[in-house]
Image (cartoon, rainbow, N blue to C red; front, side):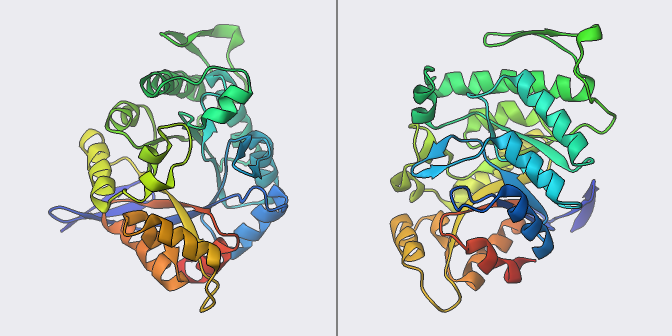
Length: 322
C-alpha cells in the first residue's frame, strides 16, 4: 500500500480500492422554518465540516429561500465551517451571474466558499417560470459549456466563449470584480457516464449524484432510486478516477435516521420504499447509517453531503460521525 497526498487529504491506495479521511456536510433543511443563519451557527457548533444551500423554488411541499441569500446568511453567521451551494441550478441561472455571486460569497466568507453548480433536473420549476425544460442531452451540453465559462470567470474575471448555448464576451475593463488569487473551488454534480466524463476535467471537485437516474425524468422517482446499486456508485468513482486520478470526489446522499431506539414512521416508510437497493442503507438506526456512510471512504469518496428526508436526522447522526 502507498500513500499519496492531495491538498489536505491523504489517500491510501491498495490494488483496487482507496481509503480516505471523510468530511461530512449538512444540507440546509428548507421548509422547517429555521433561519439559515441560525441553523448555520448551530451546525458549526456541532462540528460539521461544511454546510450547504440548495437551489430550488420548491420540491414537493417544501419551499426554499434564494440560494445566494441563504448562503450569504450562513457565511455571516459562521467563522470556520466551509460553505457551498448544493447545487446552483444551471437552468435557473446565467453562468456569469453564478460566477459573480460565487466571487462575492468567497469574499463574504473570507475564503470558505466552494462554488457548486449542477445541471438542473426539476421540470415543474422550469415550466412554472415560463421556460422550456430541455431534454437530458441538451441539459448536459448546456451544463458543460456553463462550467467552462464559470471556470474562466472565477480565475480571471474574464471569459470569451462562443458555444451552442452561451456566447460570452467579458474582458478588459469589463472584467468581474472581487477576483483574487484564491478563487472558490468549482464543484460539479453528475451521475451519468457522459456527464462525468465531460465535467471532470473542468472542475476542482466532482460530486457523484447517486440518485441521478431517479431524476432524469424531471422529478424524483423513488421506484428508480430503489434500483441503485453499490456497483453503480463504485463504477462512477472509477470513471472519475480514470480521467483525473487525484481529484476529490464527494457524494450526495439522502438520509432518514431514527431517534435512537425509537422508530420514526417516516424513516421506516422511506426504507421500505427503497427496498433492498443500495440507498436503503442510509435509512435506519443512527449507528447503522453512520457505519454505511463511513464505508464510502473505502471506495475513494472523501466528502458526503447529507440531505435529510426525515427532520432531525442530522442531529441524530452528529454524535456518530463527528
